[in-house]
Image 1 (cartoon, rainbow, N blue to C red):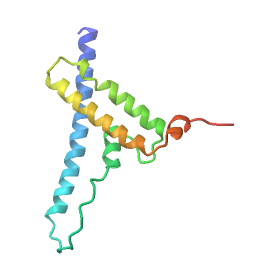
Image 2: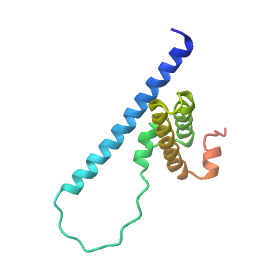
Image 3: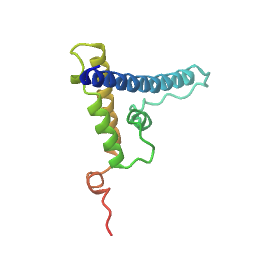
Image 4: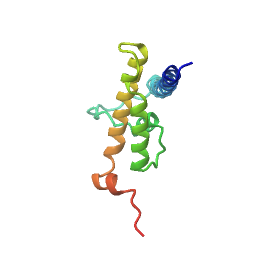
Length: 131
């Protein structure tokens, strides 16, 4: 097996695993939301709808980081996932390229959500240690 073929197969496997993890996260959230909607509730007074919440839990699931991840850890996870899910590594218009693009879109969304909670200075200098 050539080195290029092996590298391509590894990338396909990586995209497949990441795709399954993201789909499972979405499926779990959808099932939870559905079960909450099905449960009988008492009528409430009408209140104006709240803006859709930003979901940092889902964002952390997509990037595979813990609740207390530092800006550096979030950035490393983002860079690794973003580069590995580059759709340019797959044949144009293939199913693998489509999945890779979807993964990359979700990873970029998640990074935007998680990096927004850190200030510019904390993101840039938070990992420095001063003796």
